[in-house]
Length: 94
Image (cartoon, rainbow, N blue to C red; front, side, top):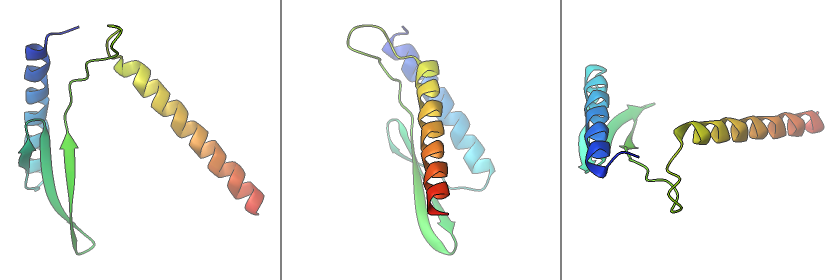
């Protein structure tokens, strides 16, 4: 696993890429914390905002480290389960 210094450097680089892309798209971008950007916006005539948080996960305490691919698989599986439940509920309501 990478050291904290390396992780922070990568995080800062990615934050800067995202900041530049958002600015190029016409958004104001404010740094609201060491690893967070605030993006004020207007949606349907109402003011809103988005807070983007950039983290360098450390992983489990057992030393196994963080596995982004495993987390992505878990998320995809959970979304599929939720969609299946919604379909079954919709079919019952017919």
